Amino acid sequence: MSDIWEKETANAGAFDGFTTEAGSELSDLIRQVNGINKELVSAEEKVKGFKGKRDRYLYELIPAKMQELGVDKVEVDGNAVSLITFVSGTMPKDPLQKQAAMAHLRDIGCSDFIKNTLTCQFGRTQDNQAKDIKADLEEAGLYPELGEKVEPSTLKKLIKDRIQNGQEIDTEMFNANVGQVAKLSATKGT
Image (tube, rainbow, N blue to C red; front, side):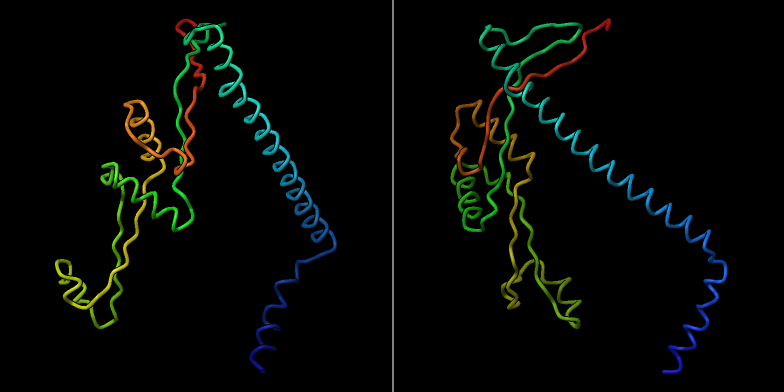
């Protein structure tokens, strides 16, 4: 118990320069950073709102108007605006639905898009065995776990390619959305 009190006594010198004025300055600095944090949260909310408004124009309003007018490319105020196809999709989070999605990909001949991770746990004394076991894990009596995944960008490209080529893909299973988005780019000379 005496060790604890000796340490406290030794640390007490750290407060020698702590005056009322220094404490007040420290409090002010903490209040200022808290104020900045509040401003930052507010600014992030505003940015999120602006992005939502922008996306409504790019994904809904402009594509709908261009389709209504029968154009897929136009130039306005030095900006080339064209419609491009977008695709979004996600692997299911539910393990059973994910397993069904993997089976679907295999059934339609897309197993090459699945990434596999094979792991097996070895004890402390099995280092040499871990190095040598690559070829015959099952014969060694080890039961590895298999992890499977499809990268999000790979899934989007796969869905887009299969839809464009008229090939089978269960868009509902992957919560896929396919649509048009307006792409803006500055034209030369602006």
